[in-house]
Length: 144
Image 1 (cartoon, helix red, strand yellow):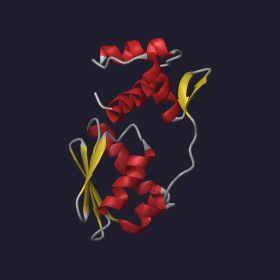
Image 2 (cartoon, rainbow, N blue to C red):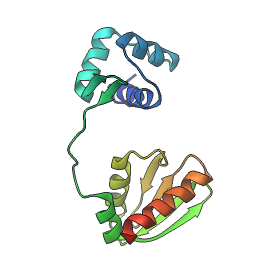
Image 3 (cartoon, rainbow, N blue to C red):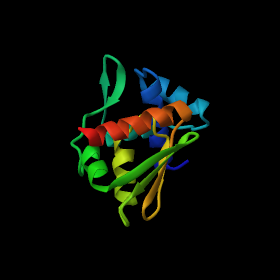
Image 4 (cartoon, rainbow, N blue to C red):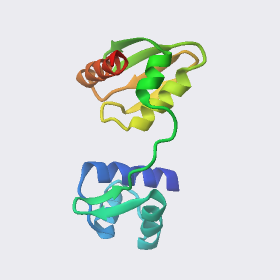
């Protein structure tokens, strides 16, 4: 199991559950088939910038890198359509990747992932209702 995948699973776990100890975290990872040592978990927690709070481990607030999502949407989004649990977002040529990165950086529950081409971003939502809600959120951001 590589470090990036393990750390991604740690992020997913602490978003879904309150994890207060490294032992709890190790047990949750083991349920996913990821065996790890306490030393490795300590290093991951430090590298990921996690801190222990009253609600369990949480990431430290980080400074934003890059432009705000609303600015990227306003500049590049040309159209957005729902297709089942997907959003198809059209951009100006050459700007789909910029928009996909901005969407991914938001870490929204309505976004499972994105795939960018040259002028199209496919946004994967967990279900149709989330896709509809996300479309409206994007439209609201450019309306402000």
